[in-house]
Length: 276
Image 1 (cartoon, rainbow, N blue to C red):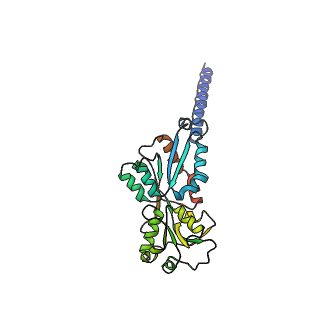
Image 2 (spheres, rainbow, N blue to C red):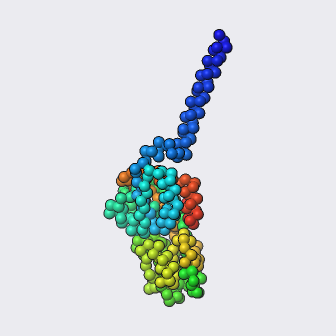
Image 3 (cartoon, one colour):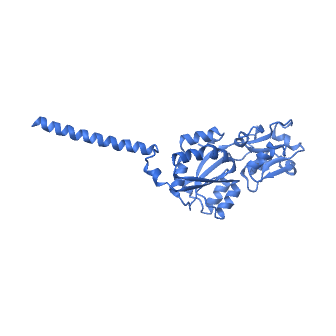
């Protein structure tokens, strides 16, 4: 009788161990985002409308959007790229957006104040650098920001009224005491990509863009970074969810994906710094 009881206890224990193992295995599989994950299945048919600064186009189109859609094959990501100021205006006027990633806190904060952003999700995410560039084949003698005061050609910058890269450019030039000297030479771009193209094509002798933009093409070369102290604040890229997100579950999944180690590694690969 005793041996029979021992056998029964052993069988019950074995069954319990097998069941527990199955539960743990399923949990790990879901956590890793396997194809059987109920979370993935629940997002099928949803769409993430991404409004992102023009300087983010390459990293999102080349790598991050394909990576996300591979992880969530049932979700479509539709990006809109423009200057952060233009995107702010579009969102204020009803642009269907779920996630906004700006190249400056100015535009994000404006939308927060208008109650269009879920501020609990507002993340100070990336950092960038402001650099002075010339065409790759340039024989110019420009070696620093100070040289801009005496040059005769066009200087391309983003429109300071709406383009964060232009706002940073104006801030640096003003703090360096150069703004009044360079203002008559300025050629204003609608976004930082337009500025980059002006310099790459040689229609401007030099320009001021983000480091990541300069690194995206072999048609320009970097002269120098904006001098230490010329910018009042770091170049921060915040990201947040819109309050009226249509497919909020997919948008939340996208935000979570951006903060994964593999996504952060891609941002760093493209020249951004993760803001800590």
